[in-house]
Length: 132
Image (tube, rainbow, N blue to C red; front, side, top):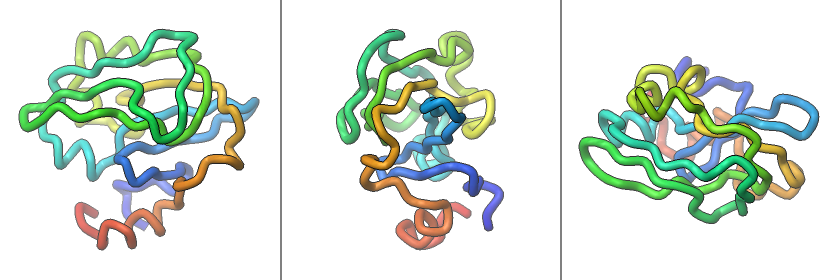
């Protein structure tokens, strides 16, 4: 599989990934294809801790050298933490989208209800294998 799409995550077609952590918690971040397409990330607007995410709904925005885009929740849940590093260094999303560039840690409502989350292999097939 491609090193740009770790297999330990679920991918949402709206450009985000979700990695389960146990205890009904997960990390959410921007995938490789999205951060490459956006260009240099200049600002990330994230919800407050305690906010509720609804799968498929916008929860913030990401601004790059090319565009401002909505961040669409890959799953429903409650925001437990935001990545404070991104306030001072939003381009961390470009440099380490699957590590230090994560966006949120959430408590999932129910992962089984998360329609549209697919494996890395399925995601690459959906996007035609581009940006691998």
